[in-house]
Amino acid sequence: MAGVVSATPVRNSMHKITPITLTVFGNEKAFLYLEGEEQSPDYRGFHRYRIVGVNRDGVISEYREDMGKASNFKGAKKLIHIPSLWEHTVDELYAIADEIRYEHRMDYKDFLELNEVNLA
Image 1 (cartoon, rainbow, N blue to C red):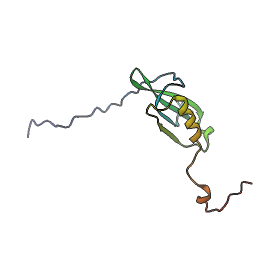
Image 2 (cartoon, rainbow, N blue to C red; image 1 turned 180 degrees about the vertical axis):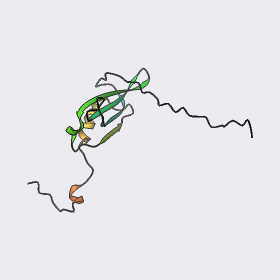
Image 3 (tube, one colour; image 1 turned 90 degrees about the horizontal axis):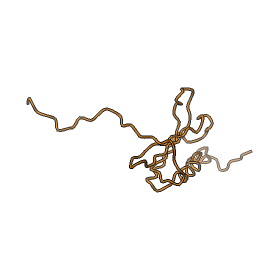
Image 4 (cartoon, one colour; image 1 turned 60 degrees about the vertical axis):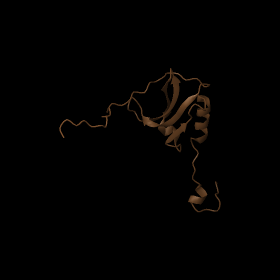
């Protein structure tokens, strides 16, 4: 079968470069909100970053903000992902993230098999 060409296209192994933006406005619609921990650019520990996808000239661009050291967010969820799909503004996504950052779905009384919890 010499000369047979594969019908399956060869995929490019290069990663797609995501465009960035240096500013976002509170009243602009956003595509998504991500928040999580990553190594800082200077390799001095992990920091918490918020990433917002916004429209810039018809392309989803990434706005990245350093929120500080990850150790300042003890008890916070490791990753927050809010798929907005142009329904929420940047300010609304920030407010939602603030609400759910420390919210856990675990019922501690049930987990510890307690009938009540004494906080003293």
